[in-house]
Length: 275
Image (cartoon, rainbow, N blue to C red; front, side, top):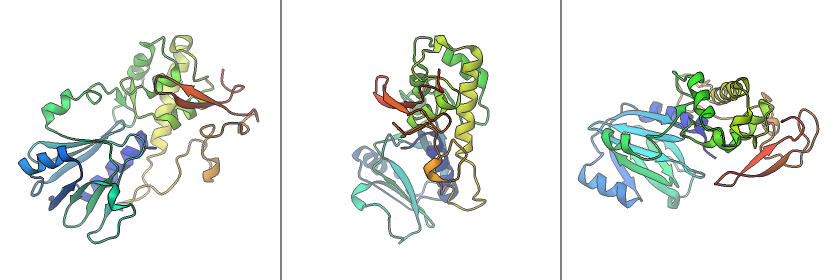
């Protein structure tokens, strides 16, 4: 499931693959995108930049045209050389951006929109984003203040609220709370200033650790598991997420899980290690 780290790596890969290149072809199964392409064609434009903002991805083309996408639970971007066989079914294709060297293919992309710089600033959900945990200029104190400003929200739910801090998804939510020894169902008002600061610091630490770039100048930037434990074994990479009824890696108590928040996302925690 794409979280902030996944989208960051995707943006980095696409930037390396098609950044600065001229678009030679564009295809889409999405009528709204197709109409824009017919009226103001992408072909001939230059890919100026590819960036992530929390769980959103923007591809900026010359002439002030921006493709905004959100992967939700199942979308993904792939890159291929011209003529290379796709690893997904063609029926899953939603967007293809072609350059002379690379074809970027968006599969089962659920949210995709063209914007100008002006319309993007007004886009609900995007314009209200909190600080991106992976941004170079991330301000931990300001992020902690944002959380404290919502005292009645459970901390697990607050971490998923992208208008407070952007980038945490359901996996990291459970892992962050475990690492900070805090029950995810506690309300923000019950946490000390130090505990909230630790949550923010750990959130950024975990996301940064999962976008470490060891690829040099290569296009491929990620080949491993999402990790929070530091273990190299993929089966031991997470503390609590997906481990209901299995023993806690610290104390041996069975991990518990239940739905949380308006969207009823499943939260995992250790009832002994987490207050």
